[in-house]
Length: 133
Image (tube, rainbow, N blue to C red):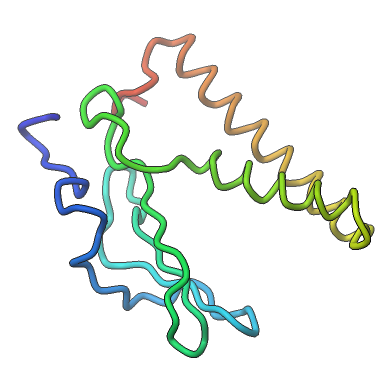
């Protein structure tokens, strides 16, 4: 771990963070919140999904800092896209198959492809896992 920059990961699963920033309230049954922590790259790293009734369903902790410096300490964007892709593929193979799912699946697969391409380019340049842009 980089001694110059302690990463949020040292706090431990984000349990001491307050999730006040409402990111998405558009769903009928759930809300998505973030805490105030913004890490390297100017992005939020902790999210909480809860029911409109206050039940907490999921805490998401994203990678915080370059892997070469901070180690693997959270999920990647690609991980969550892969989960939703898998879920939509399942729907498309069952009774919930529809045009809208197919379109969403195509866009998610394309998004995942571009994120993988970004990583490949960083690997070619020898900067993957670092703060170097």
